[in-house]
Length: 243
Ligand SMILES: NC(=O)c1ccc[n+]([C@@H]2O[C@H](COP(=O)([O-])OP(=O)(O)OC[C@H]3O[C@@H](n4cnc5c(N)ncnc54)[C@H](OP(=O)(O)O)[C@@H]3O)[C@@H](O)[C@H]2O)c1
Image (cartoon, rainbow, N blue to C red; front, top):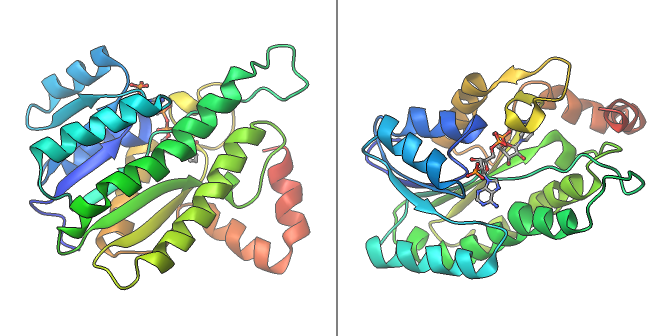
């Protein structure tokens, strides 16, 4: 896919991996960023005045419906939908600081909103010659860790959803791709230690996968994890357990 003059909708483009995707993609494409924080959206628009920003809290179903209507009223087609926004609650169910509401928020942002956006934007993706849905996934969608159980489950669900959707769409012009990320240095992981891939490099690798329409784009250490899962699944689970 030639990433030139494409219309690209991306969720969560105001920070981390999403920010770097916007920074790189807006050079040659029309980028529409969906995120929650109005100040961050304005800041982003000042930095990249060619982009379109739309404010939406993806945890709220009515706001997702509204933003879909806004998109449909402004654009007849979309070439690429990048489902990037996600949240992660690291507390365990036994922690005193575990908030029950976080279960709904994580499921709604990380999974339900993606299903709704995909369903409602499919006609616009179908109007493109090479409509593409790119779901940003995680190593934790393949093997869970102990903390962040709901986050891991939403990423596992996203993996299965993406594969099934690809089957559903195989006789249409729309493709479904996934990028599986290792630990990346962003706001989501700022309390984590260890070897983190930087967000700019990660975004370049995601864009490479998009250009080459890679259905599965394993980034960094996820490549090794996938091999380990095949040969020694018990070892993969042992390593990821306390990740
Ligand atoms: N960082 C990692 O180590 C890592 C590893 C594997 C996979 N990933 C995946 O990579 C993707 C990007 O993660 P990141 O690390 O770049 O995260 P991040 O820096 O925390 O950025 C998250 C983005 O999502 C948006 N967002 C969060 N909640 C939202 C909501 N309710 N409604 C609308 N937008 C919302 C945020 O916008 P606002 O600030 O406006 O809310 C922000 O732009 C995610 O899918 C994540 O699961 C990350």
